Image 1 (tube, helix red, strand yellow):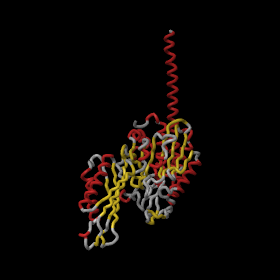
Image 2 (spheres, helix red, strand yellow; image 1 turned 90 degrees about the vertical axis):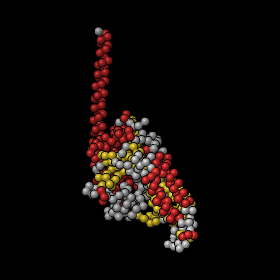
Image 3 (cartoon, one colour; image 1 turned 180 degrees about the vertical axis):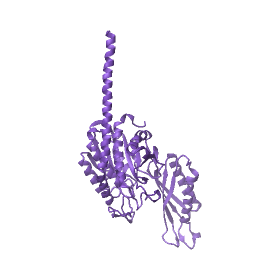
Image 4 (tube, helix red, strand yellow; image 1 turned 90 degrees about the horizontal axis):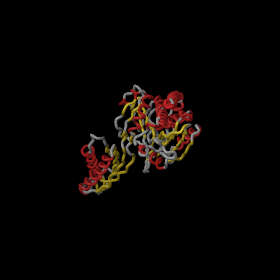
Length: 449
């Protein structure tokens, strides 16, 4: 009987423990569910404030590393919420730290703040009338890529989560980043510089999430892609040096204009004839050619500027090699000389596959499973990729094309007619806030080794 009694006691204790664990788990699940419902309600309640912020930023756009006014508004808002705030990161960046009431990992959420040298054509009450001189040309300044919306939405996320800080198991780092579009004449980008200045450290970030609003995806929809999502981007310059002469006597020249035309044509064979594009696409584009000053003078030199977009290191290396070979040998065949410079800019935007697998159900619950779909590869680029080189990240697209507008009529990004549906902002706020909370609450399922 002694042995039997002894054998029952642990069983009873185990039952009590199991019952307690079950009740605790149910309580925890209830708490998590309640928190997500509160986030959803709060996102709807804060919509008008997010729209007002966005319109203010849209009317007062600032180029990269000049986002002084924007950063000041962001910093003041984060401080009013009780967050630890660091300003002047990577020139004008702002970082806010929200420490939850329970222990846990650190997750980061990022928004970019800079505008573009574009003159706005959209007739809005909050239309930008700001002007500047960019690359020696007078131009307007416009949020022609939606960064104004990114900032406003992340400010909304910070406000919602700060109210619930005691329920958050971990820490949330809000990164408001300058200069995503780069700085003219400088070999730096906002995310790269923020990483170099330690934005992912102290405390160390476990994972990072970001979104980009899209004028060509239906409002209310979300698009994502595991693995390679957006292309790496490189900039290249080819200078062709010939011999100047009168345009009436071309036989006395070494014509850099004709030589450059042959180089441009030959560069098109890199993608069409040298790459295995069945594995992934690539792009080689000449975007600018400068040479000459008068109709009847063959100039001494011509300069070409171009961009390279790839999704693999092998393709990138091969394209770099072939550009150098083509420019050098085509120029030599004409009796000219060429100089080639290639600068690497953004790496591939790469969504960690395991993190993506774990977190996509969150997006499906927030938006509806039928509205969350995998996107094709995007040949655009994003400096969010610099964060993903250091920690696992998920970058997704938030639809903001107004329902009823045909896709072919939707104004693309980086154009004077760029326009987004403000009704999409609530989903953006809910998505980022819920991703952060779900990640912190599901830390046992984390990421690829």
